[in-house]
Every structure is written in structure tokens, then in C-alpha cells.
Amino acid sequence: MSEYSVTVETKAPEADSQRVGVAAVEGLIDLLADYDGIVSGGSEWDSWDASIGVEADSAAEATNIGARVILERADQAGLPMWPVVRLEVVDEEALDEVPTGLPDLVSGPEVGRILGVNRQRVHQLAHQHSQFPKPLYQLAVGSLWDRHAIERFSQQWERKPGRPRAS
Amino acid sequence: MVDRPDKEIPAEYREVVNHQINHHGWPYDAGGKGYPKLYPADRQHRPISIPKTPSSRYSIRRFIRKVVERGGTWPPEGRQK
Image 1 (cartoon, chains in turn red, purple):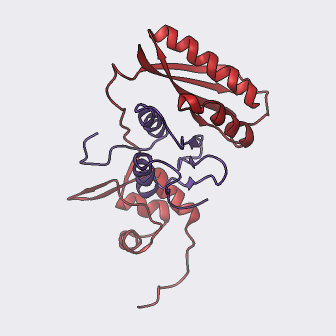
Image 2 (cartoon, chains in turn yellow, orange; image 1 turned 90 degrees about the vertical axis):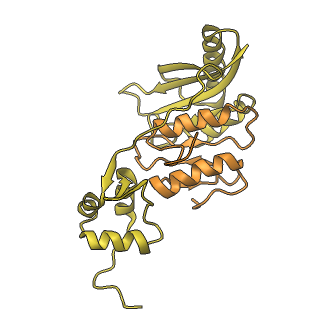
Image 3 (cartoon, rainbow over the protein chains, first blue to last red; image 1 turned 45 degrees about the vertical axis):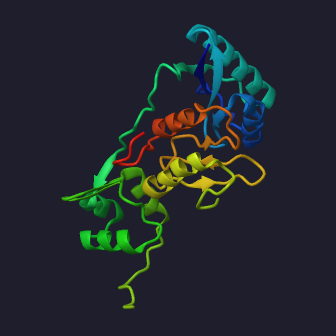
């Protein structure tokens, strides 16, 4: 027996305006607790996915068990029964690695362009603003940030006009 | 929405979550009576629920795989897996 991770992802057909209820997501997490289930979905999205751990003799058996458990319990929890667009099985014992991601990176000048400020102001924000994202990499030539983190900061940043007061 | 994870999730998950908060700007919701959730900064991606009491050592790997799929990173630079 090996432990497999099985993931089922579903997506709403284009004509379907139904969305995922938060209560249904929470219900599915409850129903998958014995399988260490992880559920992704929410009211703003037209898709949901769930991953569970399954002990089985083969990947095929794990796929059958995992997909059945997830879909039956999702239905029970009240999640929309949209078409399955991804079914994935990973042998956790054989694949002894976790994938690492390389996000979309931006340097100081690009951060400045996104925020509409000069490089000095980027430097100042990076050192003084508590909500400013920390750089992912600090190289001799400068720091690199996750673009999405900077864009998110830009949306939430409350700009104050004028020069900051001298402290 | 709260800023930081606490004892509502296991310590090894806290480390991963804090890294996504600090470096990727991902919001975290402790969940109150519900389940904790981590929201990717890229809002095209769905939030990820976090198990409160995982029973398998592979559970954290499933969670990290979800994080990476949605634009997060782990382990931090210079740290072994």
C-alpha cells in the first residue's frame, strides 16, 4: 500500500452562473477531514477543487477511490456538480519531492513603475512601510519582489499627498 | 481577515503561510468557527483551506503543492526542503 494524493477540479460550464457557497466549501472540508482534505473555492469563483490522501495498492485504485470520495461528499455538502476538468493522482511515497514555484518577479525600477513612484520612494517604502511585501531575493544588484504581491500592495496602499513629515 | 496565523493551524503550516504573507502578499483568514484559509494575491486563484488537525505526514506536501500551483513559493531562498 502507498499513500496517494488525489485531486479533483471542476469548473462551471459557461452558461452556468451558479457560484460556490462558502457553507458548502466548509461542509466539504468537514466531510473530508478523515482524508486530510484541502478544498479550494469560494463565492467569487466558478470552479472548485479538492485534494485528499488515499491509501491504495496502485495509482488506478487511488484514483477511483479518491474521485468517488470527493465527488460523493461534494454533492452531499451542496457543492455544484460541475464537470471534472482535472483529475490528478500523485504517489507521495515514490515522488519524494515537493514542486517549487518561481513566481513572476519584478525589480526595484519595475516596482516603481507599478506604484508610480521613483526608485528612492520604493527603497523608502520597502524599509518603512509595514505592509510592503518583503523581497523574495536580495541580490548584490538589488532586490526582487513577487509582482502579484506588489500589485496587491498598490491596490491597498493609502497614498498620502505631500512630503512625509520629518521625524 | 487577520494578518497572522496562530495556534489554529499546526506550526509547520504556519511557517509556510507566514512566508506567503510576507513575501507574496497573500491575505490569511483564521476562519473563526470555520476553517482557516489562505488567499493568493492573484485573485484569479481560489483560496486554499488549511486542515486544522492533519493526520498524515503527506498532508503538508499536498498543501505546499496547492500553494505553489497558485503562485506561492516554498522553501524560502537558501533553505533546504
